[in-house]
Length: 523
Image 1 (cartoon, rainbow, N blue to C red):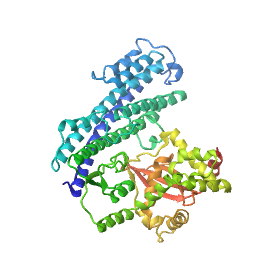
Image 2: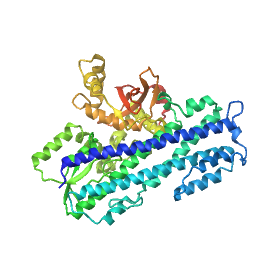
Image 3: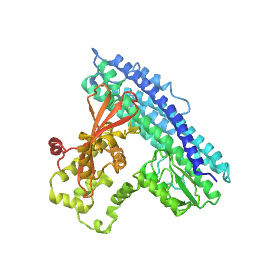
Image 4: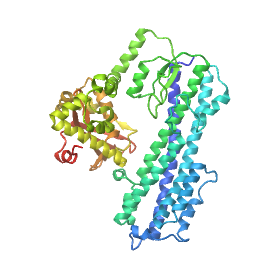
């Protein structure tokens, strides 16, 4: 039988293998930045008038001479294009004939076809490697199913045993990402053209080379986001196939129960799953990777060892100590609040459902919402402000905080400043947090996890760089037990010594300013 220790070592190996794949994908997208820059530079040099390029310069018909730009990218495409690539290529070639501006967009699109084609090959090979290696890893300890059955799992269109009707294949998702990427690049380019694009704008705004300039949407930023998405997709698809193969081995060997082995630095959700095992192998309610956890999950399933009640209690204590179970149970209660018959039958106005669609599990219960409406005042205003902030990020994803996949929370910021009586300034802020939201030195790790959870949900504003790195500010709403939204101002920095990270610097409760309150009119 495979032991938990062996499975932990396996996770370490898989994380290293993931990093190799990440580097391959980063290389492709980095080369893509240079390729797109060359297209934009050549377009500018060819069509700018008196050093300025405006939409009117690109509003004329396309000539045979103009097509040289597109042909250069067309000739770089590989011969083995697949159907999604051929369909997009046909579309770009057709639209390139409309106007000169469409020709440039089509040329960028053809360049991106070549880029995405390379990404598809990397992920496809990664899936094959994942299946082959997992097969031989499991085979060392368990009876092996037929290899012909296993080989199917690596295929793009493989139907997973726990797959639902809304399943979208990874290749479809990648090509949808391709379409969104081209739209973002086209929007950035058109935004510059409307202002009158100069050579300096290409260098400083469309293709900035420093972290401070990366706040606004631009072409490298769009490609960085595409890189992050591709890396997440590669890791998630590999993990899903490994877990599917694990499930097949479990059933082949008539294994009845399994435990959930968490990866290093596991999230609260996975810690809870790990603490509450073992689970039945053939039970649809039992957790699977990544369906029951999250994208990027590197946790594993292992045949369950027999554990007594004392061992089980110890596991749950560890999860509690990590701040996992208490806050997750609280969030689960919020998620299922509407399922509670008492709450379900409470009448509310139509605004409740509009807010809930955006706020999700953070939306107060119907009872608390009605109380906020009846009382009026700042907490109802804060609810609307929260709705508008999150809606704004959904409409403008370029405003999201950078480097969300590499967040750093220095513990002394919490243990020696915010929640320490020895820190005069920090202690005062911490006392307000404790009074309003219940956070203190006893559960500061829960506070960190809540900051981490909320950061991707709110737009970020770039602040002045004091020489240490690009600084950002966000404002969150955290909800107390009465459903009252409390405004939190949070500071971040992209440290110069690590431009791929985002480091927490500060947080404190602050009232919403009057201008934002006025702009967030109740709907």
